[in-house]
Image 1 (cartoon, rainbow, N blue to C red):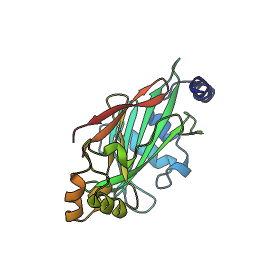
Image 2: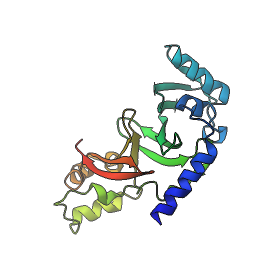
Image 3: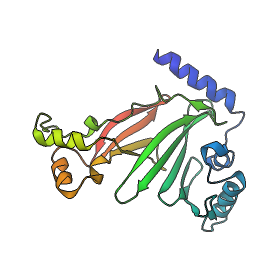
Length: 220
């Protein structure tokens, strides 16, 4: 089953890529449906400004500002509007073929964001996320000594009616990290209780053999 999955992803990537494109090219060619706030002309302007060493900002379709925060051959971090971000990473397969990982995040940066992770071929054909990584769950961040039968834990679970996870891609290596952010939206008293149960750190994945494999949890 695993080999069949790898073969499917590889076949899709090879059929999509006649030549290797860097992230800037992939970003400019990104479908408008994936980024409704910035049309192709605006995306090209951002890339040209960044390459010229200028501050890369343009007006978005809602009258706000979009800005490239970081861009390399393989990575792009863009604020599309206030509190809304995308990250794009070109991930290698074999024979100069790639897939795209796109992370869209919303929320207050200092308090905590929530993210969606998607994968595409280099012509922006969607790939199913199943098999690419195992999405994090609340229980991935439980402390080893957490008493999940306690009344305090039951209170926390009742308050955590929506799970919020902030995913981020590294610009420097083939890793993706995720943090459990739901407790950051609790009131102070409940946050203090949550701190006894949850690790305030990042779960790390490393890109290997066409998927993100879990590598453990790092400190805050």
